[in-house]
Image (cartoon, rainbow over all chains, first blue to last red; front, side, top):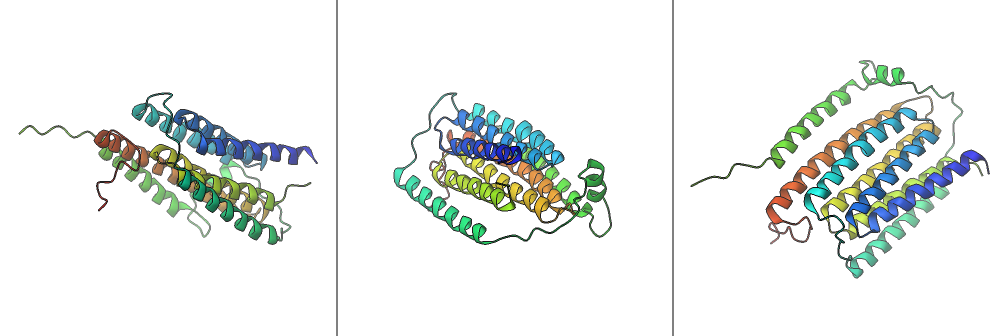
Length: 172
Length: 103
């Protein structure tokens, strides 16, 4: 067992363990913190695969943005340290069974399928390459999805403001 | 034992079904949102793994992952605005309490 595969197994155990705790713990704030650890582990997995730019984006957007937003909304809507009620035992049992058997099924499909790994020279994943292809107008450029995503973000921002805005009380 | 593509696919499958389990058992909107984040992250792992092992001469998996992260951020922001609005109207964010549209 090489050092690289040992690091992979440690990362996998970390991601799955903290992910499982995030969906089973009964304290809401702890669930958010476990989710944070799981996302950091996934960023570590991207580092392990030599995709440093994606790892940096993962840390900036997920860890720095989404988890902070979730923690804010927990503080706005809950008392800190309050425990959630235990999930319905029947529902939890059936959900566990469904997830377990679906996992077994998908794992069998993956296990039986051997991917033919082609022999390619990997391109260096530098930021200028990503930027050039992201904004290029040629055949493999991604300028159109880039613009669509920018419109989506604008629409989401305006929508958030409108939804969360408190309308002034009508005095009749 | 060398880590192959199948190992990473097993990891992302396990993470996906952990998220599914959380989505089915939780009754609190914020924790359901967290489960959805786990689902989206497992999909991102798949994109990056396929790009690394099968299409190392292209960058398309990277772009899909970047756009997915952007969409996930927009989705989380809108979801939290909706959660705050629900809390303001119902004083609760339990999905079983919000049943005005149920017949």
